Image 1 (cartoon, rainbow, N blue to C red):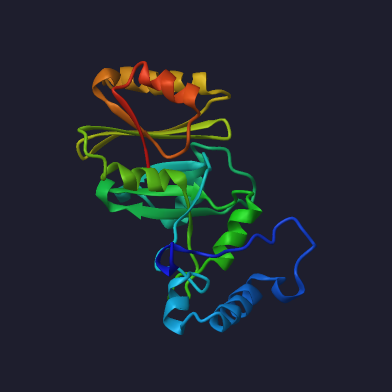
Image 2: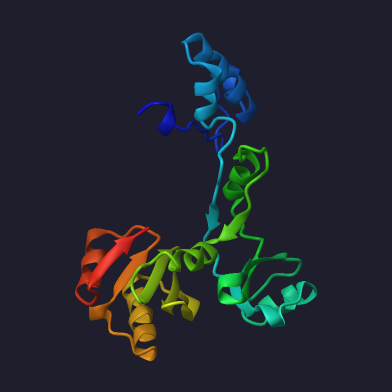
Length: 232
């Protein structure tokens, strides 16, 4: 594959049995780089192996605690109360926000995802300029990806941890962005078809795009109704 296509990382989570020379992520970078230099790798080639950082890093977290607010109504001082109006927030739960100018909206989300590993990744995976990567909800990346879908009816979904994430647009107009509690994939499909019916969209003329993997049975069940099933 060569240095153009290789990245090296670590997982120190959940074990106490680590090599003496590489017992934390900082030692991985310094000691591994030194070992590769001895094997003949140049400084320029080592830079291409992202031990030290990536030009761009996206970290998505699956959290249903999100809300899309029109930009003209958004207030950073009222972000907590705005989000708590539509989802249950715990006391002291912090709320973040990210702008989506293409939709004239701001996405509110809970910062308290409860995913320690995700936060460890955000602390240790750095961009090339040394900055840390921001953790954003998967809903943000779904909305960003809608613009890249070529069909007029744009349907993008993700299914993870008994939650369906769904966004639908026609052309450049966002019609729906929501999450649904779905204990099984059959229930997830029910909400997809319910949304399609409410929006008067014909599945037989549409492609649904998933950001999470589906097993063969789940994929075939969608093919029974949709023209095509894609992945990004």
